[in-house]
Image (cartoon, rainbow, N blue to C red; front, top):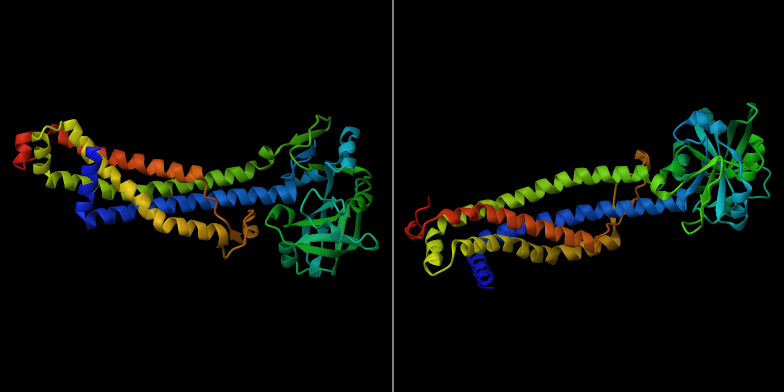
Length: 390
């Protein structure tokens, strides 16, 4: 307890030098939490959007389906097995049929993927209620990005060409029944959504599908021949890899930032020990062991982190609360980069993040404070009292 009292008095007595170090360390502390909270917020938002717009509670893929291989699309469809058809009828599975196609907006050629989905479904967030069942035209839904890049508007017609299972090409005009806005680029860019029954008729594949989307993770899964189940861990693997790479890059930034703050404390401790040799000798002469004196200077240096946490909390907590409520607006659209990024990002500051950062800062400060304090153990009391450092 005495060491803590002495360390606190010495820090306060140092005046401006102490508060400069504390302020610098508090900036590093706040920036680390802010940046990590921003990445965590992006991770949660992207997961939520991808699940609600595309992945649901997981997906069954037809065994030949490979979303990264366009040449497999024409063969990656099959009849829904009876075991899974029961879940489809209960509304626990949503069948989606995928095909390659081409549209010709304003005389240009645009390769797209045609996806058939049931109207009025409630598993994905896609607004399939826009499909007009009474219309004789082929109704289609497209994303906002797709509409902008091809100069399409709701109610307009565009020519769609496709090839059925027999290899025969066909073409018809489709009507844009609705345009939706989403943060999930994989359901927008290069995608045209049409009613499932209509696409099955166009491809001459009645009752067939390419993907079956689960309603939620509570729906039980089954092993079915010809179909492979992909859980959310597999479906979100690409997103996890992106977030992981961002965290690695962020860790380098945090390390450099913390290193600069630690360097300032290290220099301060070295200077303090050099200037306070007589004081150190006095402590030893009064009966304190060298180990206790080393502990005193270590605690004194570590107190910088405690004060930095308190100072950082003064301006950091209001900043975090404000940004968590209002979010951070970005001047770019994530879909331009193929990433699920919202126009407004809401950082997520968890208790684990805050406590973990506090522990890292305190431990790093303790180590940096102890390193120069080891010099005291080599000092002789008589030399220290005379102000001579060996």
